[in-house]
Image (cartoon, rainbow, N blue to C red; front, side, top):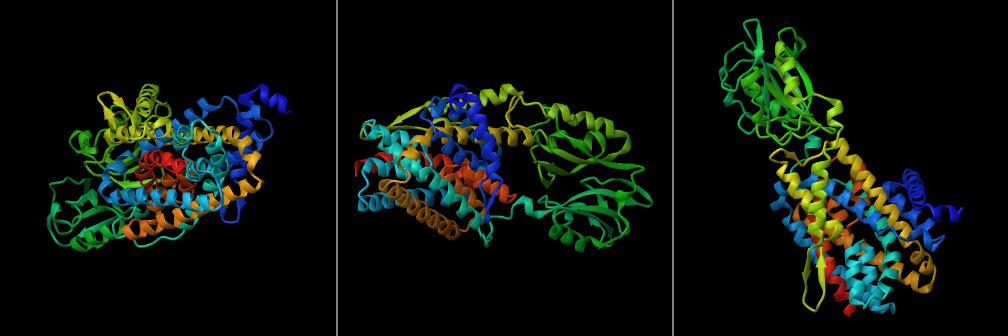
Length: 523
């Protein structure tokens, strides 16, 4: 059987991927390993024969690049929007990385572990392959850092998953982190106007915290306009988060039981799928639905989230926009947005390929450091950074950088499983050789202490600077640098701040680890 696997590396990789996915569904107490199950199965299979882990570098790099690039695309908008809010988290992560290096040196030296292996423990417990490369170069090509890395890597993944499980299950007050869109929820109610006046005077109109759709006046129903002068006895539909709708209702009058949207004889509503690339990356205001069709966009369904529409809301492929419009214009609105399931399921190979090329080229840029060492962002941080920038841009001329969310998540999961399967297979031999020796146990103990101390400091720092548990969980995944942990955190809760925290810390963490790894070797 081993010879069959050796003769077919693709078969081996897919066996590990499948069995790892199966292992990831098995609960170990409150923990399910999810995609990281592929790492542990890969370690076990790779330990059977050294030939099983050979020649997998390309697969590792490809899987990692696909994963981090799609994460960057998804998180780019939120990252740049919240950059000022995330600066304390980023600065704190640098301080904690220095502390983690100091703990590694102090404890490793006390346990009689060579400095080169200490560097491997530091890079492995924080799962940074680029930093391992820097440590190996600083150690003169010795394989000692790889031994420390192979034994510490599973420790870093496992303990951080446990830490993330604890963090995401304990929400705390975050004074500098607004509530996520995922938790707001939207309601729509019909309100009878008792206080006449301009629609613009209603609380929530100016800051786009509520939207208005239907207007019924003197027995006739139509779509409301922004410059509407409301009269006593009018009825309007108010859409938004429950607290904002309640404030608007109190200002206008009182709620009525008969919902205007139930009568679809004159004004109708439908969700239209954004599948036309010419629409993606443009704002709702640019679509000019009121001017062209006498309608209004009230909501956008993105993935599992229902978002309140506003004129500056940027549309993405795969969004479902809810439009209230006179019945006769339904086909015209459908043509505007595309409304094609088949079209939106297609991935634009040009934008995906070009974005990855730019990301990998950025990752190849090498910056010299004092002492003769150097660092590069590599296949991990390069595509992430470029993905974040392109995710923020949304489009450049005719090129739409974003991917439909289902396609993004599919590519992301595939890339992650490829990376973890290949990494496990490549590290299996080194893991097995030292796992149950005295040195191996000392390495595992040191790695466990480094991870626990880092996680405690990171969580404490996050609470101190006033960010949410979700952002701390994502930041911790980025701090450790393991995409499986990010995937696990997203499986536990729906909150866009997780990806934002990961994106904020991940690339910065790689740079700092690359700088610190040779320093650890030098002690």
